[in-house]
Image (cartoon, rainbow, N blue to C red; front, side, top):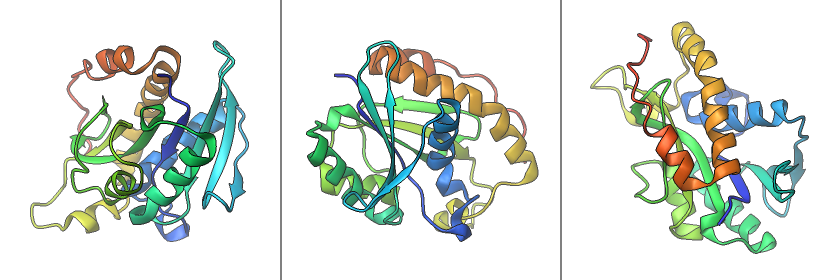
Length: 200
């Protein structure tokens, strides 16, 4: 079943703009820029939405940024899936993952929330079955640092540089998911186990 809704998870507002927790928004914003898509706020979804016609298949793909704050992301995702009559399997979530090193990404079709409040909210409102495109923000820099403090912290200059270098690869992964489906994309994205650049 092809992906029809891609939702980036993040928090609205200037205070959260460059935080690790908003990496999902960074990627789908970059995708929208690359494809010249326009975002429009849709109050019925509590989200900004962009629409893209897939050039290969001609199908419509929706991109969304919930504006509900992270821990209520599922409200927006569920509203979108109800309105467009989508199954959970047609939804891809793009979000940050602190257990994956910065510069790496993983794609999966199942799993738990893993401590991510946005994913927990989507599981609560939509149920399981959606695809997860997890973008690494790790490793967590200090053992004593609270997870919340870490994900709501900002990237260092060196990490920002690594992120910019990684963005084209993340975009290719998203293109692959939309072009070729979950299995093909998983095989390619998850196979790339290169040694990450030092980003301390």
